[in-house]
Image (cartoon, rainbow, N blue to C red; front, side, top):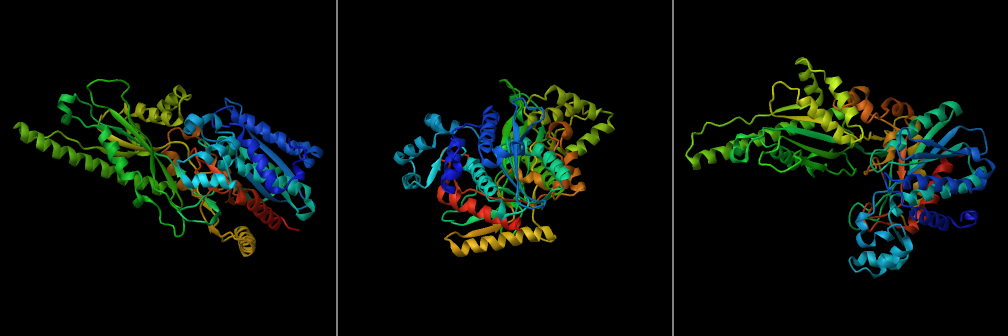
Length: 551
């Protein structure tokens, strides 16, 4: 199928490659991630450069991966002895297809989806886009198989035009981006190995993860010179159980987590104010009590965790902020109980002597220190619980560790315990002070300026890619002290989610995102805009690469 790919135009190359990749369902956590990696290897081996040098393609198995997932690497050299290197990278996994409902069988068939949307009257704008012929629909068409296709087309072109540049280009595609990022985390070791053994000088890493309009009518195409970070703050709430017939004698933990949800979920007051950057508020991803069956006892514990994007705040700053919010939730809950008990006593003609509803608030680090003073073997219990639940969802493992430790607390006082769970995505951006940063930014300004002058596109350069991406794991800004605050509040960090922060800091590659453009990523109406993504973008990245690696 790809034997004569080099004879096609760039647009048709990207179109063909994207369609072929979308046809393979590579849903996160399935063998499809292996199948698409094999397909990408096959495509690379069809290129003339790699037919002559097949050793320049290799794979890296993910450690202890039950499915057998792997990173795929390829490397091409320009004419000359320069060691300057540009990294192209992308992720190969997608979210699931359940959202396609009754047309789920079409989710990976762009041609048939296009025909469906031509007749679909649920959204007139989407219907018109389908009729225009400028859009490709399908799971992963936007996020981000078209981004892989752009890199492949450029690898093919630049391997056939090595006289235009000097240095090296490394292409890598990684699995497991949609949840744990273990693909790119494993790739950190490989990139460090290559740099050491080949004496490579990493100039920049280019991710082609998707971009989209930020508001109605927005026609700008965004280039991001860094990546937003992500933390998953968790709250374990231990209340005081009671019979429902005496409900005000207890302390319902679901009231507390509900208050935490109200104070945190989609609260724009909690976002960082960074001029010119998009910042989304925190959002709840999980909220439930821990009762496993019906009875008339109120819940003992309740769990909640949030997605929290970070731009410049360190984990230490975030912990302090979350503790203030937890204390506020505890006080609000106590006040609510006091008011309800006063009404209860009044209407039942009881004395107004009330139970107590105070709660203590701890970070995980503080709570562990409290238990150590009681003689509790914190480390031993945590290790035992991690081993017992290691096959479970890693977030659930963290909650099990906290719950087991709480059961050892001799005080038995209602409390809120704050901790972090996977995934953790570091944040970083080009500061612009070093010679290297200035060179990267200077080339972007120069090349983008030329493109704006000669085309209808309007570009906007931002510091932070606002969606989660593998780019986060190629550089790190937080200091060792700031990272310590994260690790000390992360149950069993070394075994549950051992992000190699020291190695990421050592790698320290500027990671930018120049992505394919489209709409509705992670929705069944996901679609990529072909004129920009299949034509403009590959040529733009090509020009940037040649400029960075120019002779």
